[in-house]
Length: 298
Image (cartoon, rainbow, N blue to C red; front, side):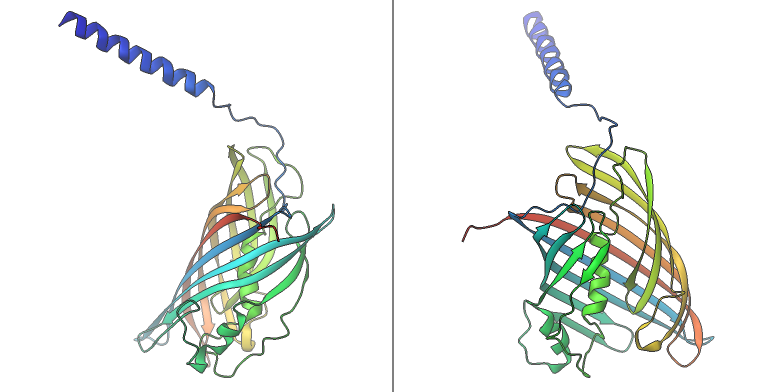
């Protein structure tokens, strides 16, 4: 019994010692300036999957409220064409799109992977699949140039009222956060840009903070304000909404690729859909996942 007891104690001590040695192999976080740039490499392809779920509630009159949900999943491919100190030229492709929307009266659903091509209502989304366009970005993610997709014409039967320009505003979330300078843990920086939340175009003023760096992954936290003021709305619709956003980015330091991100947006105000402004609120959640794929030599 005594022998077994001492053997057990010796085993526990050895296990603790092994764990302590293993922890010493993990380097402590260094608070040195970190370059976080849009810096994709030419030997790899990058793919982002962006999920955007939106809930809208609008009060039509004193007794009636309309609710609507819209969910979109977009898979887009990024490939670096050329790189210099001042800009990065990339090509962006629309690989997959799935959307669903509905309220108390109707529901619509489209998935490019299962679509049979029969329903003309989804022709606009169908035309976008496989399309690609060129963009030029600064190292800190500012859009210097964005090539139009001239082959896609808007159809009058468009079920989702979604077009190339509105999808591009969602893509902005994948490169709007890069700082102008190298940053240390605890440093803050800001950016202002325009994006879309469902049918509403909004201006974003966002503050970012480098919260930590572990295993070459930068964890960036964000908080900001949203406003439809001074943002051009689709179809000339009248939208007066303001709100907040919060979330985080986990970014690969070497390439600048977003490994994962979560963003929550909330707005409240008024929307004119029935001919007059009525109270409304919107909630949106954005999820981004990025993967790096090695190019296959030709």
